[in-house]
Amino acid sequence: MRLEAVELLRLRLPLVAPFRTSLGTETHRDVLLVHVIGPDADGWGECVAFAEPFYSSEYVGGAHDVIREHLFPRLFACDEVAAADVVALLGPVRGHPMAKASVEMAILDAELRSSGTPLGAFLGAVRQEVDCGVSVGIHDDVGELLATVESYLAEGYRRIKLKIEPGSDIEPVHAVRNRFTGIPLQVDANASYTRESAGGLAALDDFDLLLLEQPLAEEDLLGHAQLAKAVRTPICLDESITSARAAADAIALGACSIVNIKAGRVGGLLEARRIHDLCLAEGVPVWCGGMLETGLGRAANVALAALPGFTLPGDTSASGRYYDADITDPFVLEGGRLPVPTGPGLGVTPLPEQLERFTVGMETLYPKLG
Ligand code: OSB
Ligand code: MG
Image 1: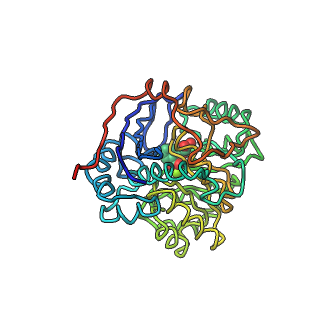
Image 2 (image 1 turned 135 degrees about the vertical axis):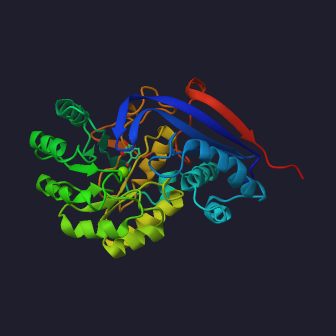
């Protein structure tokens, strides 16, 4: 497409309930949207960086800055930009995968809208709907945790993920497993353990968990490989899988036997598909992670999760698990699944009145004249 203008929108959406992890407690989502405008089509991208750099080094203010100062100037310098070229064009800028992913997503959406192709079909989706799990935050009170899990199960979620951290791990997981004997259950530590403090995690082996997600630091592949030998619960990596190269290395080292794929974390949907392809070839199951996205990011996640290697339920929950009012038509759970959008591109667009309601800032970028 030819880029005529780019709008960067900053939104602030209240979450239906506070979401506590070892990284902190989220009560709102500060979202950055990228709206690319061309002569024939426009497209939307969502940046999944949070307000604070606790999950990874990126944060929404930094992403906004790098997009304005370093990413779009490189794309404005081209007459035409194809989504397939975005990674290479932005390659000289080191890091900033979430910022880059949001730019690629917007351009890909515009491109697919103008050719009338749904994102799922473009990526290679083999399903019309995807199995959904839900990520449950840390609760101080085990009774309240059981009530939360029960209500999600009543809504139809097909898998429960419990957030854990040192001091809130064995006991709550034991309680949930005891109360809900047969459910698919997994845990996520968001890198809150050290090699020294991770020994106790072997006690999770009694609870028949699908996986233990990212117990150790992002950089600690060797530690994960050692832990994988010391516990029976399969290790899954999230934060550590920053690229297809990192995924291949982690698998080769025995650091994980399952991979969480998030397009934002790996620099875009095309790199995410590459990770899917290599895991499928290696026989490593993958599932789609989430970053509390609005309906835009959710549409992309659901399309990705429809690829054949996504054999475990994703953190692709319904809009209502996050927001009373989403910025797109809401994704609604049916029989524990979400439908893969069928319209061109993302298949969803922001609703103008919802955008207006939640937008707290906007900036427009233009190519330099001459
Ligand atoms: O580690 O998967 C994670 C939310 C924010 C940051 C990191 C993670 C999460 C979740 C929730 O687990 C996933 C979701 O429902 O979007
Ligand atoms: Mg995670």
